[in-house]
Each structure stands twice: as structure tokens, then as C-alpha cells.
Length: 497
Image (cartoon, rainbow, N blue to C red; front, side, top):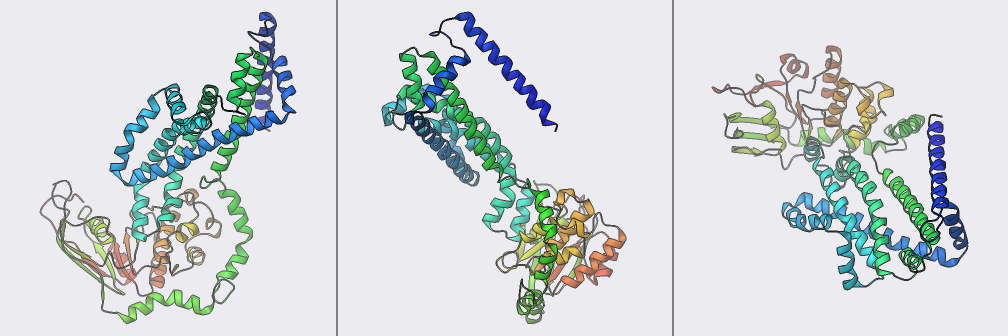
């Protein structure tokens, strides 16, 4: 309803401009110099019924759309490669800057000499579009949340999952902006190349012939065709691209999933349609079986590690820590004494200046970070599912989250949840992942006392024999978990990490 006045206003404005156009043509009264909308429409109508008209549009569309699509794909691919290889990014910088600064006319003349007129518009469109797509995608990749990438590294998410769930949300706004700019440029440069090259059965040829025969009405008619075809292509391409924007159908999907909740819960029951009793038992007992087989085995250890930043006082000095299968430990100490740094070393996110970390590259680790590090556009259930590896999850996401969240919150994007709810999703993700060691950095931040006790109980119930190292400032947490306390050494220097 709100769009109706806006559409009516746009229609009125368009009619006014058409009237002014016709009035200008009547005032000039010279069909060679200027024609009105009536003459242009009559010229267009006279050609629409001919096969040559549609053949011309199809031929130009294939060339220009093909050139744009090729540049679009090449820009994405090269930006992805350049983001991973600094030498390639530096190598591509001069030609990319050259393409953006040199006038199109220069490219057209050179390309006409090199490849002839037939595919001239394809090449020119590619050269104009590629720098825009390349630079926008590269900037989108740079803006990807580094904390989420660290989360993906710890949970060992596959390359394709990182691309789809982490890079895609960051890149899409930049890619859409680049396409909105370059789509118009593609048609302007492509048709300009056709006017210079004059390939057979092209819009550029029709414009050129209209100029030769001083047919201004035909020139206006084909200009109108260019506007319509480019507008249709832009709308269709952007609509297709918007299908890949994450979260755009979150509300609709949530409503659909809500209707299917009953059926899905039935499938999730062990022995139901979703999995056999033996499969369920295998998944939930996997951690216990491993713990029984290597009860005293060290799964993760820090041996005399030291760590400092930028030459400042050491954050850690000759610290050692050992986790065995089934251990539950609480790492305590004053703020800034290096507890988070120790966890980052154990996760493999940083390397010690001296000493050694063993097990971080061999053992599967899941974690709760100081920040939630969730994909905001995904539901809590989906945030857990994306960290599943080849062997799946140790806990069913829906069943586990049902113990931590209200039913109506299970399918909502986590950006709509409160801070405490998001924290519980992060905890559930670490517990459900198929890990051998769980590291938690202040996991109970933002939780009230009742929720804290409930979450502590759930953690104990779902450990399944895995080792747990938890950073906390409250000794009560160790008591609730039945954990042993590990305290970092006091240092003479100031607390800095």
C-alpha cells in the first residue's frame, strides 16, 4: 500500500518528461536534428515485427552479457586467489589500475586491431567490468570477520563451509554494489564497441547506420531498446544474485521449519526414521569409548611455554599445563595473567616464543571464546550444524539446545537473541562438536546464577569422557564441575595479556 503513491508519483514525472520531450521536438521542428517520442515509438513499432530486429537484440545481448559474465566469474576467482597470495595481489595491481584509468576508446581501437570486430564488444565489456568486480570482492574478503575465521580454524571447518558461511556474507554486499555499478558500464562500453567495430546483426551496427542515413527516429528507437534490454538484464542478474544473500529468507524459513518441528523431532529420536539405535549409540558413546581406551593418555599439553607481544613484558613465562582424557580443569588467575593467551596457544591460533604445545594439531578441539563468534544470520541449530565434521556431531543440536533455550528461540537467527541466549548457543556448539578436547574462555559471562547452574549441569552430562579446560574467575565454577584448579604463576611485571 505504501508503494502505490510512490509509483503514481513516478508515473506522473515520466508523463511530464514525455510531454516536455514532445514539446521540444515540436519547437525544433526538424526530424533530422531532433524527434519526439511519437516518431521514436513509430520507428520502433515498425521494426518489432521483423526477424532482423530480434536477431539483432539477441546477438548483442549474447556478446555483452557473455562478456559481463566472464568478467564477473574471473573477478571473483582472481580476488579469491589474490586474497590468499600477496604476490599475486601485487602482480595484478598495475594492470587493474591501468584498466580503470585508461579510456575505453583506447581499448576499443587496440582490440579492434588485435581481434577484429566480431568479438570486440565481448572483450571490451570484460576489460571494463573485471576491475570493478575484482576490487569489490577483494575488499569483501578483507572485511570477513577474523574472529569467525579463527573459530573455523579451531573447529576445523572445511574450505567450502568457510566460503559459504563466513566469506559469502562478508563479500555479498560488496559484490552487489560492484554489479550495480558495472552492469550499466557493461552495456555502455559494449554498445560503444559495436558502434566502432560495426559487427553484423548488432545494435551498434543499427546505431551506426542510423547515423549514416540521418535517421534520428531510428537512432532514438534503438537507444530505447538499449535502455530496456540493459534494465531487464540488470534486474534479472541482481535478482538471481540476491538469492545468495544470507539470511534474506530467515523469517520465511523459520515459519516453514516451525510447521515441520514435530516431524523433525520424531526423526531425531534414536531408533526413529533419522538414525538407527546403533548409530545413535555410537555417536553419543564415542567420547566415553575413547576415554576408557586411553584413560591416562595426555591429549593436550603446554610444556614450559613463554609468550610476549611486540617486545613488551611477557604474558606467559615458562608455564606448563597437562590435560588427560576425561580431565576437568579450571584455569584461574587475576585478569591479564595470560589465561586467554594460554588457550590461544593450545588452540593453535598462536605459537609460543619458547616451549612446546603438543596435541593441538592432532586432537580435535572445540571451544567457547570470550566472544560468542556466531554467524548472526543463522539459527542456533544451524550454528552448531556448520561445525560438524566428517563424523558428524556428538550431540543432536535441536535436542541439546532445547535444554538451553526456549522452544521459540531454536529457529530464530541468533542476531535476534539476547546476549545470554547467544552465549548458551556458543556453549552448545562446543559440546555438540565431535571434539576430543573442549576449551572454554569465561563461558558463563552474561548468565544469571540459575542459568549458570543449569548450564554447568548440562556441560557435565555431555562431556562424554572428553577433556575440559575452562577459564573462570569464580572458584564456585570449579566446585560445580568437580574440576581441579590450575593457577598460572605470579609474574613480577604488570598484567598485560
